[in-house]
Image (tube, rainbow, N blue to C red; front, side, top):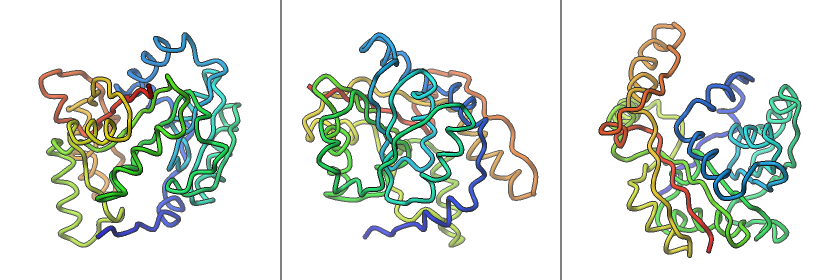
Length: 248
């Protein structure tokens, strides 16, 4: 059974850091998006991109900084309000839509070149797990690309960190069921999409972010900058899993 998180409470205490966009630009998942978008569309200028379950729309911000027309969709008004301050700090704007991902406004369907989410799909089970993947494709024009960013089921540091918090009763994010690349690709195919090759994050970065930094935070100390060193044989065990999916 799905357990909902208190996302309003989460966003009230999450620091609003304008520099987070610069850190995201260094990640393998962003570099893969930038490469694929430029290969498929030539540039970002004038593209219509939507981030769903967007929160503050950190990835959407990187699209906006490169000239895309960005829409952020979330069912909670608070992070969309916070996103306004974040985007203004970077001199860009976005359109906001307060809506449920399972009840998309009709005018958004088939309207975008790029759809994306990061930290959304894993919060659903069973039929809603398939439906949330399908929602990405429903928003796209033919030839558009969806980017599905989820936790990797094979990531040991992340799985251990989550297990410890759940055992202590302090896990704050409700249902969170990570994906294998095969499961995510299968759901994308079932929704009519054409999955491209999965992209993994940095295994070393996962160890720092979900291991060392968590210990430092408990001691009241600042975390270390998360490295993005690539170790191809190990990176398939990284926390970040990104699946690009084409709408035929």
